[in-house]
Length: 272
Image 1 (cartoon, rainbow, N blue to C red):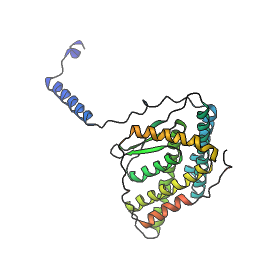
Image 2: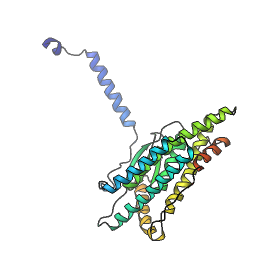
Image 3: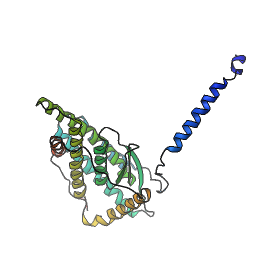
Image 4: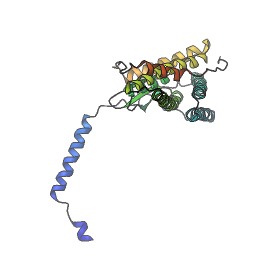
């Protein structure tokens, strides 16, 4: 054993290792610099027991929405979850407004992977906007950075993940119906479906969130929106817009809009 461990690696092996290390270093130098997520904001406080219970209810509603085979029920459960999220966001805003030291927005990264990543990024942006957050998509690296307050960031990730599952299920169902009718579906159909779904979901989520707010709450929420926008501008001073490509299938757009439009939206009394 002593002789075996004492053997030196062949010179060729050492040269190969050094070459591999240098190549890895060269690749690392070519990687783009990522925005730092945690140096601009104060660390968030741990969630209270009440928050944990509410988030548990939201997760349960979204799990039911993903599991049901009835589109109308899935939409209604998602709407109910968004209703709770809006109330949760308002409660957090009111608590922060009374705190001696103001809370600060943070940021997180959420994967936006192919295929149909453009439509998925639009869906995430719609969910973020409805929940008082802002999203910036990094297409080459396959993720979006979402900026907002801690409680809002958590529900954005929950709702986006659930809606993406539901959208995929609805799209598969729509494709099956189209094939049964003798029509061949394409990538353009799926892209158009998801784009329409994201657009309509954004409209409906915004309506649910707005219904929870009364005029006396607007100054509190507006100050938080200003803080989120300020953090976003500091993190991303040079953002650009992009056009959504491949949205040209009328049947896909119609099916996607209908999939997001099936449920009756139920509202609780407004907060105030």
